[in-house]
Structures are given as C-alpha cells and as structure tokens.
Image (cartoon, rainbow, N blue to C red; front, top):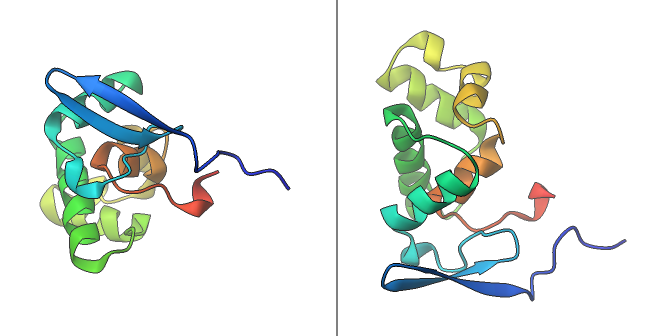
Length: 119
C-alpha cells in the first residue's frame, strides 16, 4: 500500500528573515522552530482567519504536546474550550466551526509533528 505522503520529502518555507523546514504537507519538522509568523502563514494558506478561540486551541495544543510529547485528543481540547469560554463552545461541533479541517488542521497550525494517522 502506498503512503499518503512521502516522509522523505522536505521543503523550506522562507518567511521574512526565517526559514522553516516542513514536510510535503507543510507540517513543521522541528516543533521548537514554530512561531506566530509560521502560524499566521499556515492560517492564511488554509483560509482560516484566526480569532481568540483559535489562538486558545493552538496554545493549548502546544503546551499539552510540550508536556506530554503526545498529540492531545479532540475531547481534551473541547473540554479546555468549555472551561475557558462556555459549555456550548466545548463541543466537537463547535471545534469544527473553528477548524473546518478538523484536529489535524489545528495540529498543523500549532506546529505539532504530523501523525501517521492523518492520511
């Protein structure tokens, strides 16, 4: 079975005065290289206008990944949204209004490495 992406393909994305190494799906290779400039570029590339709730999710994903070295599951993310904003914003349905591309779009913008299961 053929892979949905080639992990050997890497490209450089140059923004202003910094170059980022990403895979062929634009997932960051080095978690520590992430910054707001890359986040904003990826948001624009995926047609997403970032709002405070987006930024809260991205911050939560980054902190959770930094602490646990694992991708947080969507239920953990929605629980955090409910705690921060309101119960009605702590649903998977609301999450998908924020990130129409799902949890993997959020992982991408947060600079988390690509999961094997995202194909």
